[in-house]
Length: 428
Image (cartoon, rainbow, N blue to C red; front, side, top):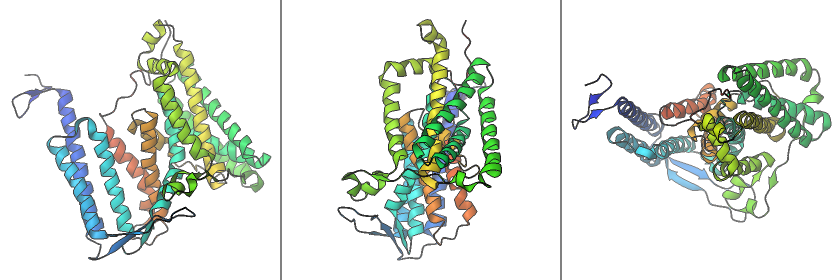
C-alpha cells in the first residue's frame, strides 16, 4: 500500500485526491455547524422571548404598497440555525456532491437572514431598501469580476483590477468636473482602463513578466499616482472634484411594481449596463465562435495555435477589453455614486471582484450572483452602521471582507480555473 492512500471504511483504498476532497467536505461541514452555533449564541439567545421583527417592503411610489411583515424573532432565528445545522450534518456525513455551491449559498443566505432578523428584533428593517442598496453596492464588484473573466478566459491573470477601477474613478471624476459632462468622463475612464489593460498585456504577454507581479505593479502605480494627485491637485482645486452624476432612470411601468420595481428598475446607467453586459458576455463566451476561440486559448493555447487561432492577438484583445470594463466600473464610484473622488475609494472592490469571479466559476452569470452576495454583505454593513446595534463600527466595516475570506476559503480545491490561466505562451 502506498503512502498516498488510506483504507476507507468499506475496505476500499482512498486516493490522495479523494482524501483531500473528504477533508474539504469535513471543513465545510464544520463551518456550517459553526454558523448555526453563532446564530443561536449571538443572535437567538440575546433576543427576549416574544420579541417580533418587522420587515418593511415598501419603498417609494408603487402601484401597490406591500404590507409590513412581522415575524417572531426568536423562532425565526432558531429555524435558520436549524437550516445551517442540518446542512452541516449532511455535509459531514455524506456531502452534497456537485450541489455544494448551492448549499454554500443557502447557508450564507440563512446566516444573512438571521443577521437581518436579529437587527430588526424589536424594531424594523426595510428589506426592499436593503436589496436596492445591494444592487448598487454590487455594481463595481460585478464589473471587476467581468474584467477578470475576460482576461482569465484567455489565459491572463488580472490582479490589476483594483488599480483599473481606481484609475477609472479618478479620470471620470476629474474629466467630468472639467467638462461638466459625465459622458465624457465615462468615455475617458473606459480608455484609461484600456491603457492599463494594454500595459498589463505588454508586460505579461510581450515581456513574459510574472502576471501576478505585473498586476500588483499596476495597482501600486494607480494607488500612488491617484493619491498624490488627489492631495496635490484636487484638494487645492475643489472645482476639479465636483463631477455631475448620471441620474436615476426609472424604467416606465416596471419601476412602479411593488417590491421588484424599486429593487431592479430604479437605478442609473451603470446598474443596467452591468446586467446587460453579464448577459452579453455569457452569450458571447458560450454560444459564439468568438467565445469558443477565447476559451480554447485559455484552455490549450498550443492546440488553438495549431488550428490557426492567433493566441497572442486574442490575449492582447481580451486583456485590453477587460481593462476597459474595469475602467467603466471604476467610473461608477465618482459619476454614478458619490459624486466626488477620494483616495483609495475603491477599498478593495477589485479584489472582491476576483473572489466573485472564482466563486462564479469564471462564468458571467455565476460571477454576477456572487457579486450580489458580496454586495449584500456591503449593504448590510452600510445599513446597520446607522442603527443602534451593539456591534462596534470597526467590525461592521470588516463584514464584506470577512464574507470574501469565508467564501474563498470554502472554494479551495472545488473550482477549476482555465487550464492555461497564468501561463505565458511563446509561439514556436
